[in-house]
Image 1: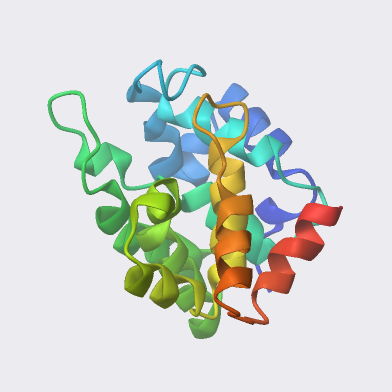
Image 2: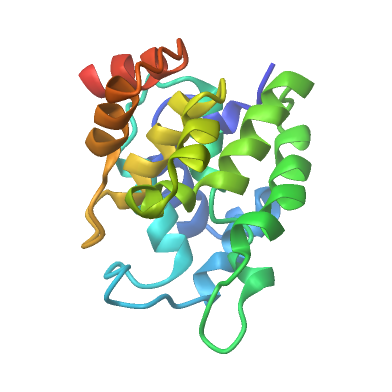
Length: 191
């Protein structure tokens, strides 16, 4: 059983935990993100915690715990990666932190693999159109591509950075890539 923290509207939960000072005790790795300002041209919401809250706002209250945790943790590596005003490598650096948090919240080994993959690869869809077909194919044939596309759409929510999931879907169709995982994204998007 996953932590009760994930039940219902996670955006509201994180905001309330932060407001009463409990986020630092329950999820200190998320709370510290408030101390890291981001580039305004990419993240007008300001600091990394506000960005996460903004991403969670794109989710539905009845989304699976797995989807919620992937979105919550996708940028958890930003505080450790921060150097000279940039977060280079935060995706890779965030994986062990995300796994630690997800284990504490009761996620299973197969779920941890999905979480790790989404955190590690969440920046790739921002550059999908620039990738070579071989890399696109490897990404799109992965069994977690549907979860990753949800993370990507949430990451782009209310951001000047466009969400290119339609481009990903069109490319998959043009290459006749039929990955059942994509249905997770399509069903989520249809809500």
